[in-house]
Structure formats: C-alpha cells, structure tokens
Image (cartoon, rainbow, N blue to C red; front, side, top):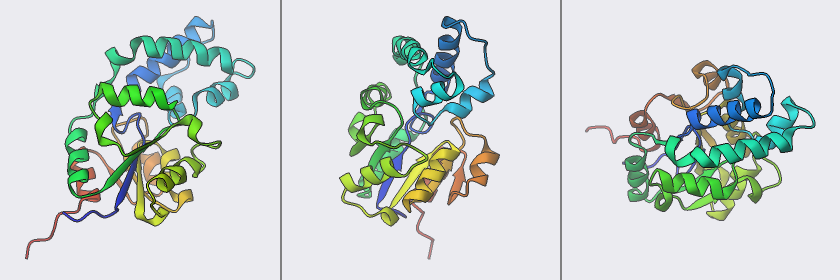
Length: 219
C-alpha cells in the first residue's frame, strides 16, 4: 500500500474515539446544573469540534466561563467510563505507521484531556504530534492549529490530510491547503459533510483505510 499523503492529521472527538455520547451528556448536565432550559441533541452536536468556552459564551452570553467549569467537572468525572473505542482505528494507525506515514491529532480540546482520551482508547503511542487548544491562538475553522501540527512534523500543507467528523474540520483543512476526509461515525450529518467539499466522505474505518492507503491495482 502506497500512502496517498505522507502525513495524516486526525480530529479526536468522534473521529479517533467515540466521545460523542460523553460530550452530549456533559453539555446537558452543565445546562441542567446551571438551571438553563434544555436544548435538543441536534443543536448540542453542532457545537462539537469548536472550543468549549467560546461556544457556550456565544450561546449564553456572560455565562461561558461558569458553564465551562461545570461541563469540565462532569466530563472528567465520567470520562473514562463513557469514552469508547472506534472499532478498527488502532489497526489503521498501525498500518499507517508501517507505511511510514506520520500521524498527529489536532483538537479544540485542552491537550491534557486529549492525552487522557488517547490513553483511554489505547492510542497514546500511535500519535507523533498533538495540537490542543492552547498550542495556538486561533482554532478551527481557522487553519492555524493544523498548520502548527504540520510544522511540528516538518511537513508542507499539501503533504497533509486532515480527517474529521465535522464540517468545521473540512473547512479548516481547506483553509490550510490540506486534503480533507470526513467520517460519518461522529457528530457531523452526512449531508453537511458532503456540502463542505472534502476529498472523500467515508462511513467506516475500512473505507478510510482505502482512501489513506489505496490498494495497489491488480496487474
């Protein structure tokens, strides 16, 4: 298998790990504990992929910091119990490394929380670089965190692809001059992912493997 891109950068939540139920529950708990009206799951899922406090501050002006603190307390208390592996991701990362592909994670979460998540799903040793919330000033959909990760790996943007589960991931990848692949097992709706214009939308890890490590045609 010959890699399509020599560097593959991944989003974490909903891409490398199934954290969507944990995140959705954390938002609901934060709103309930703060005596705010509930919102439906569809709206909550649309917040995923962006930095936590700015999302909450935009939705609830003047209460972003308070809600973020409540969210994080509940999220961390239930983190390891609710996080789940995405079947086949560990094998895919092993295959990428065997093909000499360098890998990284670019997330809007705090780096330490992402590291905890990677350990929980057994992927901590599979990642060459990690860019979290505090590594850059700007965040997705701005390309800065993706470009930071590429720079850390000594790669040029056209050598990289960003894999994520939200339209904001595709937008950031395009703004960075990178390839973009969207996965449907996370928070994003397939139609919204398609509309963002990625190189591919895949529904399963095997499909992602075929995009990143295209099979050699039979002769």
